[in-house]
Amino acid sequence: MAHIIGSISTSHVPAIGGALARQKQQDPYWKPFFDAYGKAREWLGRERPDVVVILHNDHGLNFFLDKMPTFAVGAADAYKNADEGWGIPPLAAARGCVDLSWHIVETLVEDEFDITTCQEALIDHSVSLPLALLWPEGKDAGEWPVEIVPVCINTVLAPYPSAARCYRLGQSLRRAIESWDDDRRVLVVASGGLSHQLDGERAGFINKPFDLQFMESMVSDPTWVTRYSNDELVELTGTQGIELLMWVAARGVLDDTPVRQHHAHYHVPISNTATGLLVLEPA
Image (cartoon, rainbow, N blue to C red; front, top):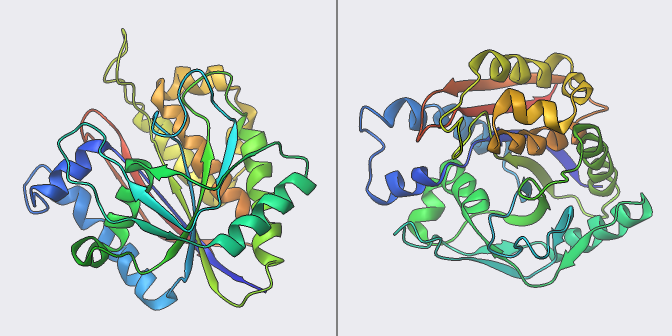
């Protein structure tokens, strides 16, 4: 049986990629953000995950407005990072864990989740940036030290899955991982959020009180956010703040386990976005 070591939830603002490419980690604007990942990397050094199940959203690289699955699971041998038009050099490709991918696909279908299975897929900043933040040595070497299973959740084109639905997705992922006939160590990563809106009348909107309450609830009351409809969450967090659904799904993976907060960090603004980092481990 595979072992779930915990979860890391993190923001994935595209500007982070530009800061990495230009080596701005010690720049006064960026330093508070990048310094926060040191404790997460120390924890990873002790826990040594083999596989990362990464919950993310696609920004038009694989799916566009004409075809947008609610949930999609990657089942490829490798995932190349494509140019996103920001002038950022593409990061290293990620190796896929195909055996776990198919086991997750089969388990989710058994649990009545209608998913899209992707035997070919590209990754954008929602996958590559968390890898670069957590394993910067992989960015420099051109190879990440873990295999990945990308699980995509639609937060781009309404209607979105509800927070309650995403939490149940996480519970199903837990069942899949724990029933996988392998002794490898699995980390769950949630990529997205927190409150931000990139356009429209509320461009630049950030809701710090809600963000902090949401982060606290991930430790003490993980179903707290499920009381809100998606319309309410967009009102509270901004159009793109709905990306917090990835955090909810990741917390669902740890549902049956008392958790301990190993590390948390919240910082604003990074490119008009509230950024969060949360490391949870079984208590």
